[in-house]
Length: 194
Length: 189
Image (tube, rainbow over all chains, first blue to last red; front, side, top):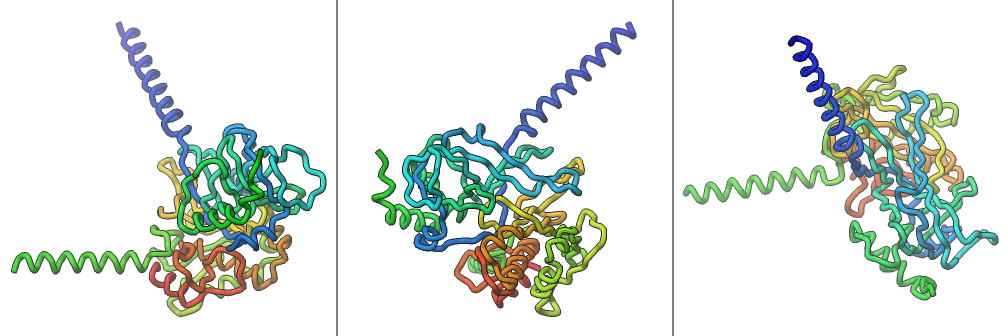
């Protein structure tokens, strides 16, 4: 009788523990929360300056989904592995080259986007530098890129360095909208792709 | 009479709320470090500040934020506790990125997590990126301005939402805090 009672209590306890773990794992650990990190960067306020600064201006489409892209998280050695930087490597199929300082370019290149996912105890954090919006899956973009000093291409000017040519992404504020309109106007002939 | 009193009260509340929201237009809400309890910002400098040759630049940036007797006092500590900002210099692969902050708080289990900008922070981690400042040929004055900008973020100052002369403007500048920055800082703290 006693044994059966203790077994019952143990089983209930185990089920309760599994339930709590399940709620935590699926409800909290795997939840995604967006966090915009404030940063200071070399910003271009007009289309002319942006165009002159870019090493590579292309029309291209994203080749891998946001979950397939390589997510890089750097940590501080003396801070128990807490993150210090994050970024994402995204594959782009080049449809058209508008400007390039590089004579040899493959049809597909890898670029750096200023966002990344960081796993913390209370969930996954989608870290966006200055509210940068990740390139959407399988979309066509006009991209302004620059060599980062390591021979890799990185998007410049954050949100105002990538422009969706296929669908209207939610434009966060008037400043982005104005920039988008003026960029599309400046490159309206070049962005036409067969 | 009663209706007049009610209308007057409503107008007073609306005016008060308007003033409150205007005062905090370009600051994040919430507290950080030991500002509320001691009126100080405690900071710990990583060894990278010296190894990258930025000690004097950080000293200048601190001086920039001590523009009046009412300004925050910065206090350097040799060992960081929960309410100590951490300052670093490093490198990044993100082209043009001069600096960033990571605000932190402890969750209910006592573990560090990234905080939202408008939450109460335990402290802030401040980073400036030497390799990008080199790559874009920033002058010493521009680097000090960049550090001043990031320290401004650690004091919960946001980028201006209207056109202003401000060290908190996005981009590379060679200025320190302006009259506008001082006004925002004093209205916040």
